[in-house]
Amino acid sequence: MRSRNRLISFRYAFAGLAYILRTQRNMWIHIAIAAGVVALGLWLGLGRMEWAILALTMALVFVAEFANTIAETTIDLITPTYHPLAKTAKDVAAGAVLLAALAAVVIGLLILGPHLWDRITAVMR
Image (cartoon, rainbow, N blue to C red; front, top):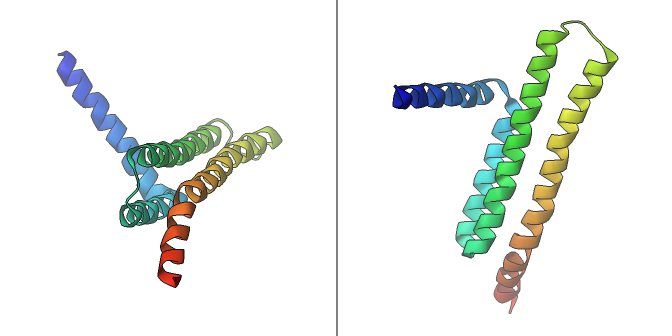
């Protein structure tokens, strides 16, 4: 019975993933950027720690987008009409995604930048 409950829990989790992918355009943008970072990282031959930091950073952006969707859908359920506090909550949730994305850009530049610089300067020699 416990393994059946676990399978049901996974089914619900995958339904949540499917909902995000089906309804949130920004999630696709995050995925496309992450795929580009992964491709660039493979080309640059990043080390394990660099991959670990990038993976955590990408996960942070994805989780922030999930939390934003949770906030928006819950607020829409509770308050179908406009309310200034609902707007504030939605704006703060969107701000959290923006903060995570900006942090990801900085971390990406710190990790990928030196490797790219080495490649560029090697070609120019």
